[in-house]
Amino acid sequence: MSNPIRVLMVTSEWPAPGMSRTAHFIKRQADFLRAAGVDVEVFPFKGAKNPLNYLKAWWQFRLKLRRGRYDLVHAQFGQSGLLALPKRLPLVVTFRGSDLLGTVSDRSGRHMWASRIHTRLCRLVARRADACVVVSGHMKAYLPPSVEAEVIPSGLDFDFFRELPRDEARRRLGLPEDERLVLFVGRPTQARKRMWLAERAVEVLNETLPSRLVVVWGVPHAEVPVYMSACDALVFTSMQEGSPNVVKEALACNLPVVSVKVGDVEERLRGVDGCEVCEDERPESVAAALGRVLGRGGRSAGRAAVRGLDERIITDRVIGIYRRVLAGRPEFAGVCLTGGDSLAGEGYPERALAAGAVAPPSEARVSAVRQS
Image 1 (spheres, rainbow, N blue to C red):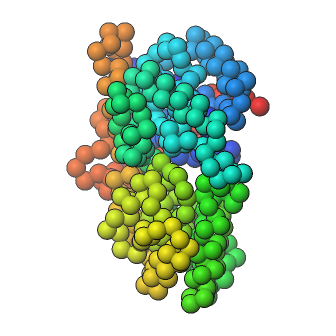
Image 2 (cartoon, rainbow, N blue to C red):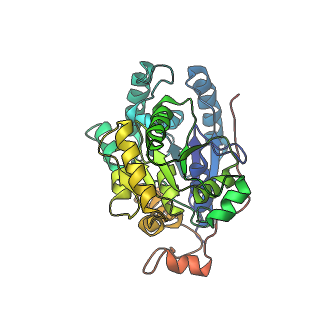
């Protein structure tokens, strides 16, 4: 009987229980891979831009490689791939944003000097990897010319991100039922997110159309779709992104989105009724776009536009990369997925959703080594 692919996933970000401010999209990918038959073990560590943390994590990761039995390593974020060098196993790396684009300082609002070293190290990882993934096409330009990459955005769990009745959502959150609410999701002190621009835009908007800015950060993760159902629009003002998850999550909840041009937002909002990409980044332009979206009223048609990002479809694509990396290696000749056929195909994801297939496990067993 064939064996499942055994993956050691290494990540410098991993979600704290219940909170919205951490990388739930990585845990979701691991959960869906397990549900599809991949044997995934996760090695999360806290780098915190500290070389000593990386050195400790590197040593513990090497011990895990020696003691465990794995077929490949999947690094989430380029910096996580440093732990896999020099390579003992095939390496797949998913680049997600700042690992290639650079880190913006919360003090100055500019790229940190140290991020030059960070991005160079991540490009080194890309050269050593057997397969590279970027979450948005524009990120390919930041890879070395010799490195090819496949574009695979983070996926969506449509059972989790779904629209609730607005009045019910507002009652649950204690929000007023008779006000226009503009949602901002992000850490207020994170310079890259530019909450000041969202605040100023809403101030300008209030001169003609009374509205309130609702800032969401540090709330339980389960409440994020509730806020997206309660509010009338999402405003997104970030200065740098790979493929911003909050925009895709808002679309899955049919929440109208107003955004500056960043990451792959133009691609996501193109042709979606009830959403706008601002012509420039002036507060007046953001306010004008918000005014048009709020004046239109109602929800967007976003959910249908992001159906192709269903996590089940993304999972199939990631598994395809695993298979290609392992193909032709005689030591992996007996390795394949248990469980048989892929769920993707004609009528998917509607067919899979209707059948209730491949729901992510509620409790995923994770073997973790954490750095304090």
